[in-house]
Image (cartoon, rainbow, N blue to C red; front, side, top):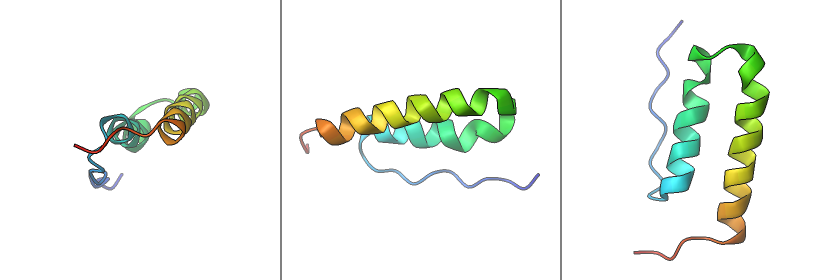
Length: 55
């Protein structure tokens, strides 16, 4: 497989963690992908509903 580039930094810790998880799915069994995407969606939805205060 080709190397996947690192996800961009958003400077929002929760979003950056989700991007890293999704970028790492190539190394996980396909059976785990749906749960990972559901968890990612939940985190992103919470972040959109209650955005962090800029530093």
